[in-house]
Length: 617
Image 1 (spheres, rainbow, N blue to C red):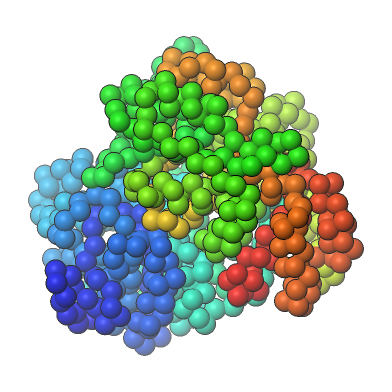
Image 2: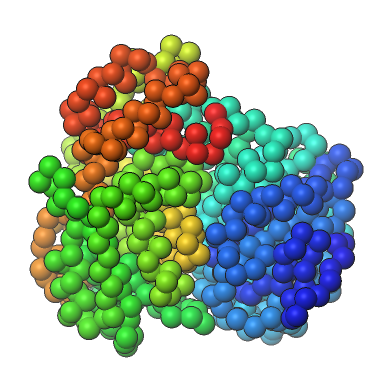
């Protein structure tokens, strides 16, 4: 075990990191496990930790125990005392832990465990995970209500257990060889430790270019880095063999007793479930605010908090300059909610010049290349929010859970749901993909469509709309909106909580008839609940999104930035894209817009900018 020395009130390991930490935090975790009898590489663990320092800027800790090395970066949220450390060591149980996330029901679980005879030496949720694992084994994850990624080391057996929450809100990347396993909260963390294949994964590239930058697990854009799927517990033995257990796969469609429920009953059930989801996410020893876009989702969170008696709430919204007549903010609606509930509101306007200056930082913060314009918006919003508070609630997930997108209604009447989904969501079909990619990267590009077809064919969702909702909420949501929020908030040491991804709420939503969700242009039943809570002006408005017009209509310095990246020596050597395709994009960027209203030039440019920023590919 690594020896430590003390400085002031902190334990300092050999790498200069304080090894104590607090409980329940949005943080960064890292580790190396050897399968060849060698001692874990402490320098590699330290490199992974340093690369994700912004996720947990308050302190760091490192534990080296023979073949196992664990690292942790922390952000204080719950239990602000020094009673517990991360990595957490429980000598009595023979367990070590690193944990990123928050278990919202940890107090109830703690009480249950105490009644079973367990003694606690700290006051937060990290130790609850250790005791729960000892009491119930890997099945403990089924009892957790929250978001988490953790690694547990059983000292006696040598087993390593990795786990990720149901929706993959907290990330977990890994690199595995015959000799060792490395894991980290970020892909760049894995790269920072070295000894990893950083060449581009061809299949992942096809997903990126076809499925609006979504690359489903276990793939990432790099061959040598993979990600643990959501709702998965993976157990490694000392030789490196592992087994996976998927512990959550809720059925879509009516369950026993649901067929006779009226629309009013569904609304009542949903309203109460939403209250519970929002109330759970107020668990903290620091103030909790709300990212208020002005849409129905974030506005409803504010309204529900008001119902629960919350006062003095801090809310935050962001806007950008107009471009080509397209408005860059939704301040009218966010101001309306802020005034209605008398929140402490912060309106943040970002001029185009500042947006350009901050783009490199936002790209660096991406664990994987993500094409959505929302990234820079969340990055800059998080920068300002973190100056005031450390925890926010956010409205991500409502569209995927309650059918808010435009491609769900056509699914009802589609003779071929897979093709209907692809037409609405995919950026390119396989034929177009082959024209756009460079000669060395073409091989048909059928994997994305095959993936959707296989997913739609799984048991557990009979209705075509439910099939699309299941795919979007368990795959697309995880590797687009959820990843975006985690990466951009954690870049500034800010914890984001997403009540619409409360798994109890999601299980209820999966049972609600599709017609009730599709009503009123999408999210119908959610809007009905909202009418009892928030002003109707926010509900009966055109659907909005996080607008960043400058990245949709690329021109001027933005065009120069993208052209320079795609014309560089590194880009030409990679040859990812066909030369004639790039020239057509440079000539008229506005003429190449994807079905989801994204810029094709920004999509290919962002990928190249990300590869260059991280020195990979």
